Length: 152
Image (cartoon, rainbow, N blue to C red; front, top):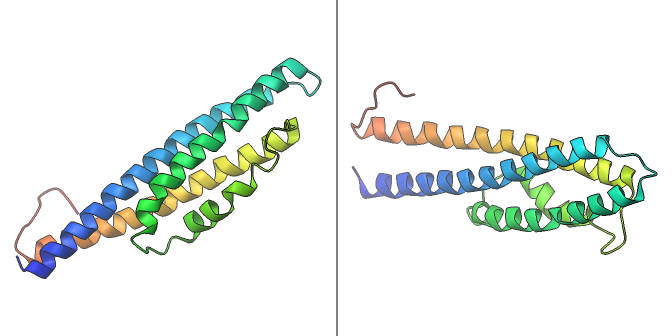
């Protein structure tokens, strides 16, 4: 195998590994947000005690988003065109605008549903890019005489 092909293969495999990490962070965020949305559906707006505890849980999402942003930085360094991910990372800090003020039930619902839907879209975008990278990897292997059975 040529040195240039080895280098490209290594870059693609590292990029796929970084994408896998980001996808894991997104799936974790998506799972937490989905369960939070289900909790929000069961709460009445007049129940102050539950709203207070939900506010504390909601503000903990900012830590999960910070973790996601750290993982995303691995992909951002590779200069891949991923518009949904870039847009979300640039604007996610605007979601948590109140600081220590409590969020209303409607605000928590809107933000949580937005994060849940965006996470689904971003996972789809990452999966498409990861599949494209795997296709390139298999093409490089095929060009250099390394064939895989039962694989694309």
